[in-house]
Image (cartoon, rainbow, N blue to C red; front, side, top):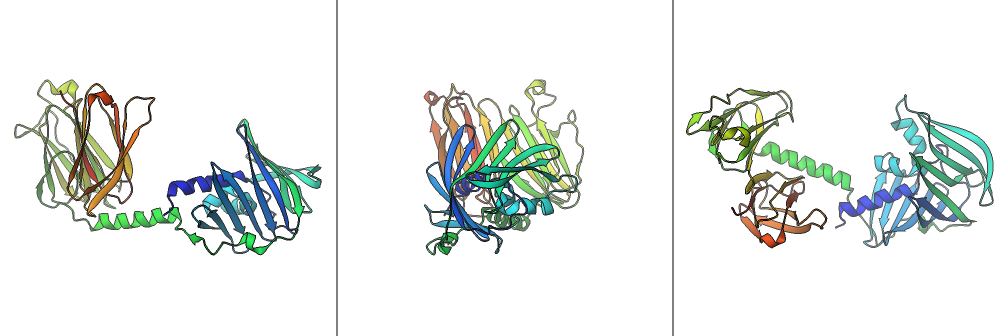
Length: 427
């Protein structure tokens, strides 16, 4: 399977060609040419082939070859990875094409994507000869700023030289060694040995839809439940979550509305079996989906007085549907939660050993997989540790004080599970 990261490189490599005239629907003359790009003090080279309403360019970057084949008639762009014999197909109008491959898109951008108040304006500055071809010199402006200069051959109906103007920098693309010749059709076809990969963007959307369906089907708490820190619990109307706390550690309660309508949640702090009146209790009204409320308890600045200490928290779903996440930490122990599709991390004491405990809490599958990073000092490279944890199991990693670890980060991909994390250091 091709990683999304690898195709991020391929997509971004298309910036090698940038902006062209909206009127260039396809070349009347078949030709091939060498192509160079000068950007950020570096020069790279490639080839381009143009035949009627098709063109192909290829380039090697970071020892990886990229081939792009555009078919204007079928309105598709194919990005080939020769090493893995895979290709990605994008439709005309895809934002990734619109951002990076102007020979097919400049006019489309102006017509479809640029608002009425933001228009490209092009000036014709006469004719100049480039590589032996008479070219029109054109400058294009966006809101008064020059963004591109290009030299377009009438004979080839194609730009021979392009300069991209961005702030104080310029990117120069130029064709040379231009040869008018009959080109074989196979240059513009996908080899039969290549297989099409799923569009990473569509794959993410598909995964998001599956996750949303899983979340919707997950039953919510509608009665009383006891949990321990760290935890993340879905709470519906009538549900009550009770979580004992270490009164010597900072506590964060994070509630978020996951209903399409208003949700009401009541968070009640307790100490020695009684509600803490000095903190007070009031319902939080979360009016729309995604709205959240965070509360913090056991702040070291105030907890020493005893009047603001909390050793239990009760979260009551008065109306609607919420997720509640509870975390605790101090200098020697940090308990927090990662619900997937994001990175979370903590700073730890580099002068002490570190025990990492990770427990699977995936309600949608039999395991959780991801990775974590431990870093010894700010200048050193982080060490990456991949993990797979079976359902409700715990894995432990121990690092002696000699490793001098000062930072821990954990990442779990979308749909790859959820975990409880404890970072423990000796007194």
